[in-house]
Image (cartoon, rainbow, N blue to C red; front, side, top):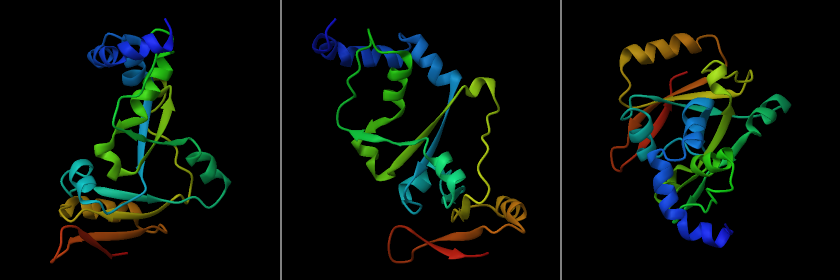
Length: 183
């Protein structure tokens, strides 16, 4: 099948893939990899609402200042925000190529996230956790609705570490948050 013929069938195949017809690609997505998401921003109100449990969670700030950090973040890939689904030849593309198209492409409606994703292969055979290089975490931002127990637990974990902690407070005159240092 030519790429042009495959392109005509792509919308139907995307729907089928999402429903599980392309089982090897979806199995790879669900069982054999992990995905770590990063954003270039820390103060978007929608992000706090969607990903931080309605402002109950935290945001972790990262930086890289040496080669270990650069090597770690070099694996991250920018998410492409598109109006149309990516074109993939489901008949000739590998399950990994299909899965990457699914993982690294999102609707333009989500472009405010400014997201990068790191695909961690072979997650099913290793720990669900990854080793983060020393010194790469610089700050933790607490949501404006974080409960006292979680705030204290995070403070205990970060005690005696060179990591700044900020508490979000709702702006009085606009939608959004201000972050005030607490450590």
